[in-house]
Image 1 (tube, rainbow, N blue to C red):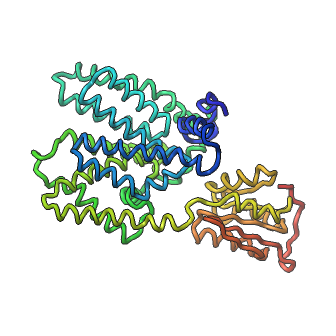
Image 2: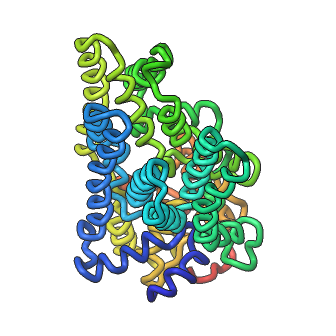
Image 3: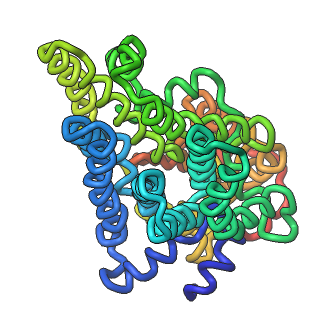
Length: 448
């Protein structure tokens, strides 16, 4: 696609907004399309976020808070994982912190240049991801509260607020319209189903686990206890500090950064459609790190500060060894090559779950070999009929639960015998052939 097509056509065929892909097009023109080179853009953006976090933390509470917060971001597995994705998550974190840095400039020195800088970064954030809208909403709500406490009347407050909010809202209107059209008018701007890949609104466990994932990414019971204890003492411990020690404005600044986007995401998931996912909240994780760093520095005893910080750092670093000593990315191309070696045009290839049908099919379907997938339940009736009428059946599994996988295999094994099972990085491929003793009457199959 050209740059214009990336801005106008790409949002029609996939659920995300175009800024990251525009940057990626320019990036691969410089470095090529090797896997490491493509992923390097996100890694560079993540590295650039570290000094920005330090700058924001130092500006709010001094050197120590900035250093601890940037250290937590730099070493935690949650952001390290997404810093390797050829996706927009690292850009979302970078622009979130950059917009808040510019937002602080606007709050402290509301000059035209500072206002323009904030507006530009906010609009870029809006073109990155739908959660960018939630960040902007949190910033503008906080700004309204800040001005309400500063101004002597409603009219001057609204006038000052409008000078920042109006250009930001106008600049963000096109991407907001793209997402709204997908959700509410699916036949006019792409397929509304593209943005319905999250099954259900979050429950209480999903929400609380989000804060643990900001530290360890893949929660396990022992780490949950340690992390939640550290977060409680570090973040909420500041509630027990005299108010004279804390700035109410700075506290509201950080809590609005952390809580408001999460609250908007939860509300949207229940009122409009499910949209809540911890990885989309990577920009909010920075506020948690700064709040935790502030709580650490408010503890009066240096030895307690050191012990708590060490506890969190150890519980953060420990899972990284597990993360780097196992495969992280699914090997779809190798699985497609393996199936192709023994594939016949009359074979049936079933790819379980929609989220892996697309990447497996990218390598498989482009060679003229078709798959069926997005299985709801053990096997949909139409697919069951195809299984019974096919001599050779392939099943591809990646993210499905063990119980669901067992149900699918049980259905196939009623008429077929397993001949091959091969494990790749995050993918398992099964091959079945029909048993002569279980042969059922079959009608001719269309070619797949």
